[in-house]
Length: 572
Ligand code: FES
Image (cartoon, protein in one colour):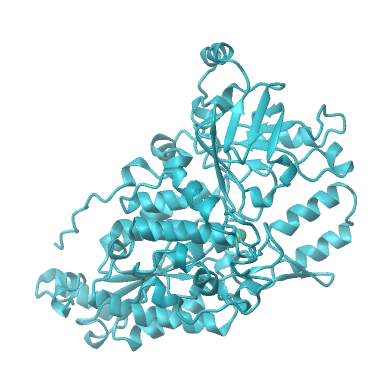
């Protein structure tokens, strides 16, 4: 139990030195009095709100509710803006900036008089970015999820972020949707603040974070506009003050077991493939190794229970009404480490007590799962010696065992152009291959992995075919898309050596991805391969290219992995 004198912020506000005078006088300049800040835990609300981030447009208001809770519990709240990574607008890929947010979080917390933090975010990359930084700094921290937006609505049917737009775009390309209908969808798909309401990366990462024990129980399922969301914000404010007094840090919560719990949740919700990269990176910050094989082991024993798009039928608002994440996890008690601690001060098992499934068509009981095993499979083989990922539940089952000739593209623009060509030499048996879309090639591993289908095949009614790349895929996407092929083509991985016409073997049940070209030929091609010049010659992009790791290592910077202690700043 901490006392006011051994709060971290005491070094700034509590000491009778010239610097202490400066810190207190400037707090008074901000309008605060010693009653506000003396001897109280300073809580930084790291807020990823911005006017260009529609998923976080309500987080200014929610910050006020968090502050209310902090004041109620006897803390001193300060809202501090941090990088707002918006999935919709940031180019070339928001993923490029996840590590930048993580660095910012760590350094902001370290350099300022902060005792604990509430992290406000939810759009895809903000959750892992905030959590990675908070793990590295290791101050008491609670993640407050932005919450999913309301269901989309068009023509009497619910619309899901991303997922339905990919589907209807294919129909529009095939001439089945009019311009007028398309505009109606544009107005109806995003109807409230909040992150994407399919089980995309945002919903996956917030659910995973809650399962890890870093968010209050139930918080990740609440729709953003719901008044429960406001009350949850205040609860985070109250709880973080208690956590500071008890010095409950991320390192006291995270363990190999809590990450196993998170992977189990990921598989049961049919989570985004992106979660694999983020979980590996988050675990790396905590000094916990998370090899890709671990995902496959847990996937094989975990039934998929959430019937949510893109793998299923419903949306996050339905998930909340059906009982939310607590109800789903309660159904999996025997597969979870229930004694893992959480930010609530209780164990995961205690957090789940009393949770129940209200709508079994949305959250299935164990006896009637959506799929008998998890939503992600890890592949290895000559085309992906260090691994690749596929989401079988979101693919045409007939394509999960498939051998076909490659049609290879070196860049997304060339691929898009070719797909529009009605004379493209392609059949549904072909395997589309895109390279130069990995961590360095993208750069930032853009979400190009759901490669567009050839118009020629769309017109024939084809809606899925095998596609392979070193890119990621939006969590709202679907199809027989093999992703995260590692090593990436940009650094000379086998993907760089594939030629149009080569046979590629995909065997998801056997977990295989092979390039059926003999070794002698591949050696010859490798000798002819020329290393491309770095994509970005200066600034953050250059640092990224120098220090980013490959997909199976989480795409974190190598110098940010692990738990090496950084000295506290001197207060001179
Ligand atoms: Fe923010 Fe999808 S665009 S979560």
